[in-house]
Image 1 (cartoon, chains in turn green, purple):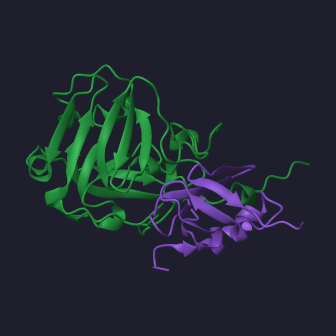
Image 2 (tube, rainbow over the protein chains, first blue to last red):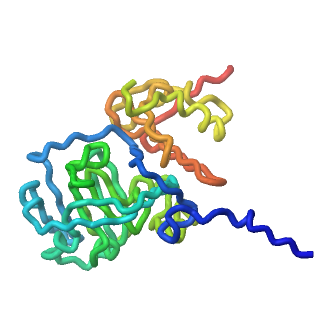
Image 3 (cartoon, chains in turn red, blue):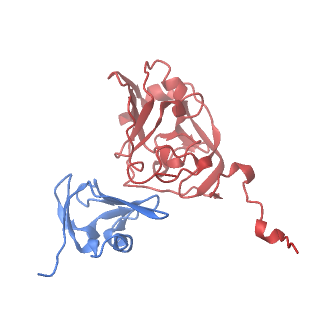
Length: 199
Length: 88
C-alpha cells in the first residue's frame, strides 16, 4: 500500500519562486567583511574604467553624482545563503558609465578601496544589469555596506557587488578576484547554485 | 582587538582540520611588511564567506581559509614563511 504523506514535502518556502535554491530570507542586512572598513571622503573618491588598450575614463564624486540616476529595486542573494527581497538603491547604471568607453574586452576585474577585487564578464555589467550605487533605502550608503559607493550586480551572488568600489579594469583574459582565487565560483549564479569552484 | 575583527586564535580549530600541528602557534612573516609574529596575533575577518587573517602591522592579507562542503582552500601567499617549533 502506498502511503503518501504531505509532511515530507515541507511547507512552501517564504519568498516563493524569488528565492534561489539553498537560500533563506532575512529582513535585516547582514554585514560580511574581509578586512577593515575603508573610510573614503567624497572629495577624495574617484571611479575609473581602464580599457585593455590602456585608456582611462575617470569620474570625480561630483561628476558621478551629476550623471543620470536610477532607482533599482532588486532581490539580493549572498553566497552564505541569506537573501533579501525588494532592496531599494540609487545610483548610476553601468550602461551610462560605459557610454563612451571603446573596448572589445570580454572580462572585467572590479577593484575597491581597501584592496578587494572581484571578476565578472563585461556582458554581466551591461544592458541594465548593474549599477554603481550610493544610496540604500533612501539614505546615503553607510561605509559598512560599501559607502560611499558600491557595485550592484543583483543577478550574481552578492560578493560580486564589490563594496567601496574604485574602478573596473577591462581585460582580454579572465583574472580571478579575491574570493574567486580562494575557492569560490568564478561566475556565481545563485539560480544554478554556483557557490564554490566546480559547482 | 577592535570590534570588527577576531584575533588569530579563531583560526585554531579550522586550521587543525588541515594540519597536524597548531598553526596558530607558528611564527609567520608578513610578505608585505616583513613583520614576524604568531599566527594567533593576526587580525581575523570572517568566518564567512571565508577567514581572512591580516597582518597586525600593515593590515595586508597574510592568510585566507575557505571551508566548503568537502573541500578547504588555503592561501598563504601573504606569508613569506611559517616557523613551526618541533621536537629535536
